[in-house]
Image (cartoon, rainbow, N blue to C red):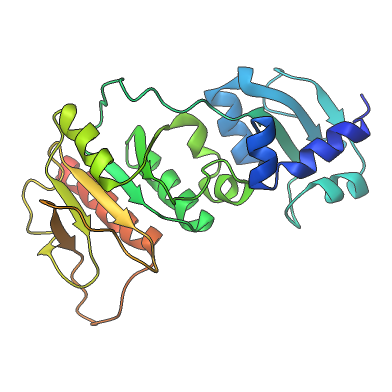
Length: 250
């Protein structure tokens, strides 16, 4: 099948937030990202684009085989693995659905797509099913975020909130609390907080601005004997997430 010029134009527009918002579509690129998409929501795939000899993991949508030069013009990466998929962006999660996670992970204005994607992938690997975001956070379905997350976004329930206050209120309505704000400089030692992961809300902030203020919340920190300024947001999230895993299996 031949990929029409209009489809090529559409695909290129999906690398912009405006294009995604206008069309309701996103582009997943690479074997892992496309595989996660197909495993989670195959019916959302509109079409695949691939190089000769590369095939999608499942037969759920039209496949367009193109030359290397055409694929290169449509890909956002130098080594795109010869496969991409255009898919409908999942509808926002129904905030009336009761969460099943033992604790909630929230990101407050995490705007870096690499950090966001890595945190999303790590959260899934740690066993969480949800990720809560405040306004100002990155578009979860941007191409950079999808590449960093290896498409894990497609199998996570992502909920959106205007700010930390509304997020905390929603969590409290489901019986989650207290709220713990991660902080590189102050707060209780994460290894000493016994109830840190028991029906709580753990909030990771952006690397630059940190986490916002929230009345009644407590702060928790990662001890750093080296006395360095701070950790990368995704690195910090990994430590917190897998401390929960360690406790689960210890």
